[in-house]
Image 1 (tube, rainbow, N blue to C red):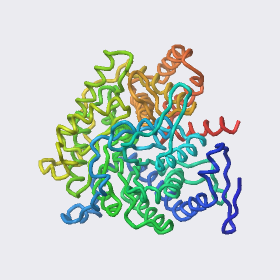
Image 2: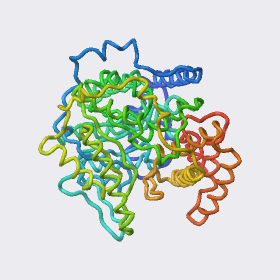
Image 3: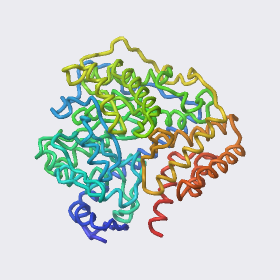
Length: 525
């Protein structure tokens, strides 16, 4: 399909079946194209700035709080806009991809919020992305249903409030060309949802609410804010009705939390501690420095000094500015078949949520409906009748740059068991992703792109710093492939990608970039 508009072109290169007619209307595509033309040049400039910053870090520079924005941090008076009524209480949020069954189950889960995810837990096949938009239209209209033949799924009377996570600035959508260029995946996801559901949400008494992933600076937040201003005017949506929670999931963003809130203050809904991508970011940004080598992934817990500094600073920063602080995802998932595994998972999740509630977080994330009651119980006890604990200022917290960078104090070693685990998880997750499933239960943990990034980046880091040899990693890869051979197709291709992103001389910024090329090639074949 090709549309000619403003003497330029919009070309759709994929086929998403019946969903295309509802989602990819000429008017919706024209709106996405307007966003692309207006903002993609700045997106590309900011991505180039990321590369320049990485070069400086490789040359020995360490991040610090910005001198040029000191006045923002030292001004005690500014606050983000007051939360709308349906975002005042966010004590439990469930997250997951945008497939139809997940959307229904998550909205029915008893959580206050459902974050519908086009990013880390979504494999970005064209069908997933377009049908996902259709599913959200039906969810907002409360007409969404599913009949599998064995079971019927429909919305209950009381459902969670909907937030949407578009893909990050670094990703593109290969199936849509504007003026011959692939569009920003984030502008594509956000633009389509806003076009179809922004006014629908307002009419329903809510609003178009978002999560923003992978930001590395307040300038990237400024770009999103300008997108919101442009979109609200173009769609005749009242200014300030878009709200966005920013995931602080990069080490560089941790140094600019106040500035990020300031840039989005008219549209801000707070910050979230995106712990898994944060660990990945630590490895990626300081990959050449031996003092930043992390031990086996299971040993890097939220009690590690650098993780404690990050989460406590986030709560203090948010509450100082009147914003919500939302806790992170516990990767443990329950088992309905194994009571012992289930008990371990519930205990681990409860411990994690007790820590977050005690630190002052206003809510938390879970990945499975069975975990909602556990997290809800903890935050009910902490909050009582209050919708949040923003009034808790955490003046007792004092975090310096050295605290955020104190990775060397993390206890633990690199072991062969840890290497093997990363290899196995990496292969299994990539295979799932290539087969169109972006959230995979592996070893009773919910793995997504963020946790897979930890697995492959740790291998890269360990090889570079002589904790394991490249040859031994390849041996373990062949051994794990032998074990996985009966589990389904795609493991050989996944192992190739894993080796490419874990063992190459040059570090790939995101494993999803080369994996996406494989995904697109398979679709077109």
